[in-house]
Image (tube, rainbow, N blue to C red; front, side, top):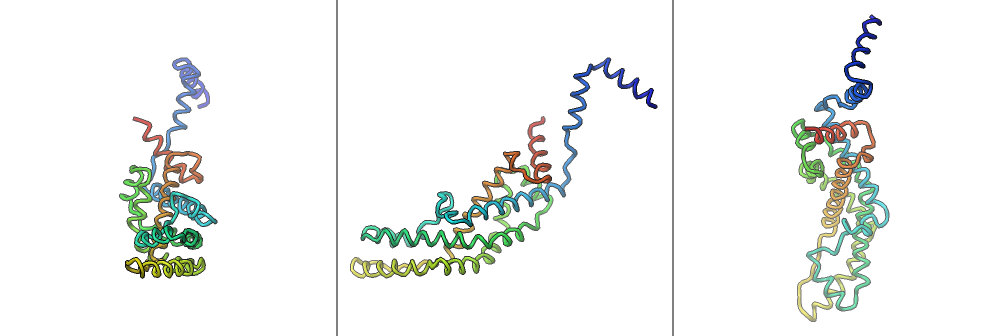
Length: 245
């Protein structure tokens, strides 16, 4: 048996040469095994979980929202008239303090949001997974948001409500509303009372999904971001498949 094996190796060397044999061996090692649908689903769920972990970690620190232009929470749009009127009247400082309180509430709220996101990464079908894998760089995030945002919002609302209270957002809003109402009593206009809990809840979720999409894009395009075996397996395989004709 050993004699036959030696003959085969010798013939191969004579026919192809050492360098060609090395290439053949390397090619066989580099060719990935076919991905299973189970691996694709697991890989995409893990990508979303990793993206959520990193996003929550980045957003929940001080200035995670307030210092990040991508997710900074501005004055509520329906109350812009309040901001404009008060800034013209010299109340810029309390306007800034109020905006900071909105962002501080979001930073506090997202500290407890990770379990909500992880519980939401369920129910992905095989068809969903394959479409997501072949989709754009934020396909998994778009899928997650479309399927889970309503439930996430319901679960997230009490978390935000507690954070809004802790950051005293209402306390910062009260002098704004009082000053504004005094001004419009003279100049004319309607009092404005935005739903601050609703606003912070929606903007907090918007911010987290923006960050999760960025994390997904990084995992898809940067091999160094694939920190687990299944991420390397699924997204590395996808990259090789896209490169090969």
